[in-house]
Image (cartoon, rainbow, N blue to C red):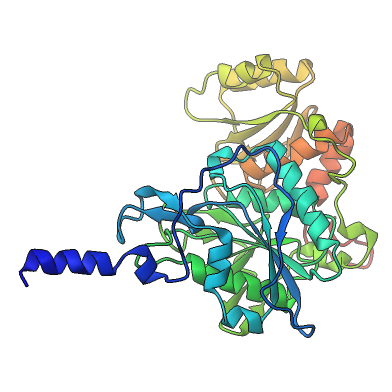
Length: 395
């Protein structure tokens, strides 16, 4: 056999089916992200001694394919289904949990909207209300994974474990991480160790608080980091270590644990447009005034240093405040707190701009006034452990 025939044979052998026999690529077209859907695929088998975990598949790299085994940034058209991905985890996953599937819209990160997130919260709340469901795992694209997770952290009513995961590499690549990430996410949710943690992200054997985590690199496998706060813990085979916890665990099983942002009472039409304005040398005032003219109700500024804006942006902000627009002062550094505030300007603390945007959006959706929303930024948006005799849990 000549070397060209040999190479062709190797290429055929290393097809998607050969690498992952239970994964069958198919032409799955992204659907319009309007509703999440309500079709449930029941567990392959049920063991009454095991917890029930519902997997909600939104799409993303974890169900994508590449143009070659080592072409991690070159996406191809065929995609795999979430059902085939879960089937790939058998038979081992059947010893950990009774896994059912909520078939959601298979969409890319760029197609996720506030409307879609509103529907997603309602769908997951409905699943978590089922007595046979002890936790939920959400698979989604990594580009906006931290925002999906933080939205769920702010809006879900149940304190059952919710774990968000995905992958950095496609299903037919030589170093696909999706299978292991999903297995570990189900294992983590089934363990119940993150009860009352809110939503967490599980990637690369580590799990992180939704508020703290951010994607720190566009392509590296260890991209998800929790900035200065660190990981909550690790999943090492069947050994799960939780070494940190979000401050809200102190309110576990009390009415104070849940946030005021109940999507059952907040219609998607109530959620206003809120945008982020970035600051830099010579930043023009139009970066703010243009948004105001477009009808935004709130703006998060990603400022320099501790939240600084250019002179033109400051003037535009003052004008916008006079027109009733509410601002949040964050910074663009990715770490460190912004404490500056004043009439019409709320402090983001160390909340990232893209997450401060969601908290402001939800705060405005309730119809609350500036003082109340500011209180939420100082508590929900900036939780800490206060164990002093006269201190609250999250002052």
